[in-house]
Length: 284
Figure 1 (cartoon, rainbow, N blue to C red):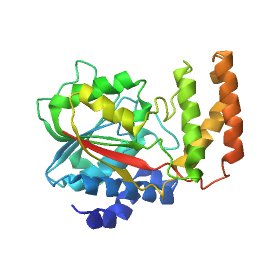
Figure 2: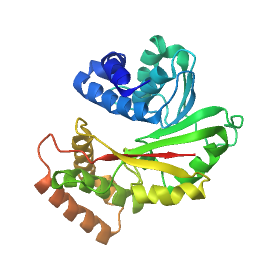
Figure 3: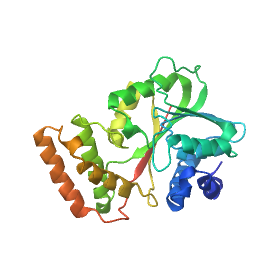
Figure 4: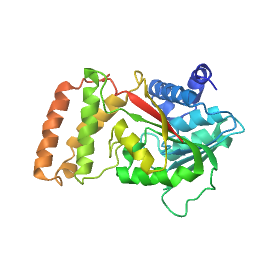
């Protein structure tokens, strides 16, 4: 399916998401972004796809559309179905399962592919996908082990994440929000936000060979429509105001974090902060 076909279907795909009931414009922009990614990945009708970190299914819906009625998407996430707000993962999955894409999707929440009990046959999937979920891993080692675990199961890897190298000054607030959250996590104060282990594109490219993958393509992805810059800035400022998360930090780290939060407040706009660019990597 080409880009124009997938983008044309983005409004109907977005309207099928439970989150569209709360933020229809945001859901549409998120779906358009994923439609552009999937179109560039050349996922043919009839494909079998393993998606890791599926969350509420933003990417799952687009993958299922691309795979077609003869395709299959196994959508895996370590989180419990009750996780998420204002729509939980389970509520979003139920909406998708009840729609026309439902027969093509197999949601598996509370599933860690590093658990020895989780097993698939060799080359069971044409593709394995990680889309905007890798910063949620507890460490780079956990990500490496996960990529190594799924290596025998899929022929190709499609990976996308935020690029930590800002393309312009108005992306610095998003970057700073990401770095602050990453420092708090690295110092041992753990939470459940989207940012736990931020790393660069170069970091991923160094990691792939250790997990048995060979990168064969990388490029930048436009994120002009996305609201994630605003979301991560708000999450960071909320986190900085949570005393129980900061009180456990070593005092020098706590002071460093608080100073960076002061800078973030000074440079962030009330809304419409420009998100970082994303990047996409393909590997075999």
